Length: 428
Image (cartoon, rainbow, N blue to C red):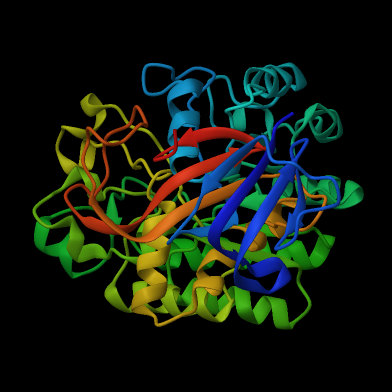
């Protein structure tokens, strides 16, 4: 294995409270020194990080890789290239593949396919119920042995609350985390946008905030009943966030994340029926967006994710209410998080914590840190380099995002995964 010295960079490692200019030393795929080389270390390669930030590789809590079943939308190769170019070295993938991740063989196949050195570490979220149908529970213990780190339903609700209760009881028995999106399927039925002034003006069927809060009330009450660890994915409203904070105060073990687009966009960004702004959950009102921004800054929201969902052009270039929800996000997670932190006047370490050590803690993995002896998953980026978001520049097979044409700062210069240079944005 190579011995690498990343020199002249500013190391920012929120997990260890490090923020200083120093060299980073890597050997045998591990971090072996910060600031001072270990005895006998001789670099076989150096990377110049002048004017760059050297930080832990990003950890993304929601990235759809589209395999198996949706290879016409994206392939493992295309999305892993997108992850590396975005500085993402670890990611969780939801179970809504085709077929869903409800059998150990499917999970093992995905893990096997993702073993190339230039690929990010993949942590599958297993299906809570067979075929995500909300009827029969999966064999969670077997799925965990195959590599699942949590269990959820992606965007599909379990309508039968007795099934959800039994799922949480099963998960609590083995201390498996349960990941759920809080959205009542009846209140959200046929809805395509936030139930507010924009949907009314455009004649779109709305999804009220109550769809989130009513589902949350059920989930949190069952979590209290069972003692299950729950993670609420893609919180979208101020009222929902208040409920989670109150639940935590009462002793419920609940964490939550927010999608990065919900930090910057609101219902007004639908404009005149832009399908790029079709999301699930929908973009909410300005006050909701502002509450999410504050909640993430204060730590009430534990992490920010890309909610990466590659969608092919055929599914987007249609009327708004027919468009498939979602957008590409792996390559935008870093610059959009930096943009949020700059606008909120937050230190860089806070911004990076929300996409490194904090999501790693939710996943329960040893990642998102540059601790000595940890895996050399490293992101090097130029925080001042400004560039425009274009379809041509995106490595993801999904080219649809509401941020096309926007100029962002924070260009990834290099990504190392277990000490392997998986992405070279400027080095030869």
